[in-house]
Image (cartoon, rainbow, N blue to C red):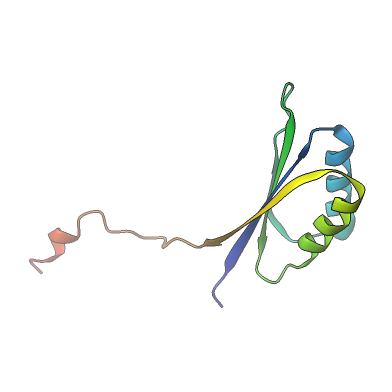
Length: 98
């Protein structure tokens, strides 16, 4: 089965309550996340939270829709990531003499 990863970037007005709600919802629902990242830095006006999930994990979208009703989410961006080949040939011309 070909694995496709989906990355969601949530951009919202920065406040600690947002991060706490997202983290608690993820923990409570035990989502199968590949990665989770957020930028909690002083001085940032917006909070960026990035989820990377496997294909078929619909719970992240449901979570974001629920959170959007409770907090001010500026935007949700969606990216599909295709897996890169593990082995790449750097000098294919060297094989032409075989």
